[in-house]
Length: 268
Ligand code: MLT
Image (tube, rainbow, N blue to C red):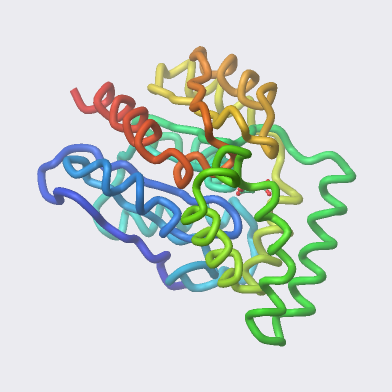
């Protein structure tokens, strides 16, 4: 199986523990570009999820196979310890890493995410989206985009939709470029993910530095979702005002600041 695409930024050799960034659904590592430009002194590796960006698809195996592939792709470039930050779906993968590759995690950041599994209705909705995307997979990109286009209304916060037209435009473009086969794979994978609060308790037991961050206008991952993760990790929720579910895109400066602060605690 081919390795995932790893996009490296900032200083390389001898610069200390890297920050590994896992993007949300149905985007790719470009989602982190504004955070990355605010982190010039930090070695960063932004990963494309299977089938998204420049990464090859994974035949099956769900988020667990994705997490294993992240660990082996990083090991392939000599990275065996990292601060791993995941936004939403990226957070689900960070949690799978915590469970399956705990030694990789020198620190963890969970942004606009949750550790709980889906309820029946949520699962059914995902499978419906996956079916629609699979139907569109043989068609053109525009047909695939139609499946996720409605996310524009939910993924961004009120402030962004009212006052950041350039962000709205860019996220709309990204949604239009989402590959239908990868959309289906991700939805099917997320539908069967288990509850992973126990993995968070494991990290807390080993005193792994952690950040739980939420855009206060996020309507896709709730305040309660974040409180539960933070409680399991023994930290407080960091709230970023004027930001929705895509905090790393909507408010990159405070997000970069929080990630840099987390990494600082593990480097020294
Ligand atoms: C994401 O932003 O990655 C999605 O909201 C994850 C999900 O569908 O649960």
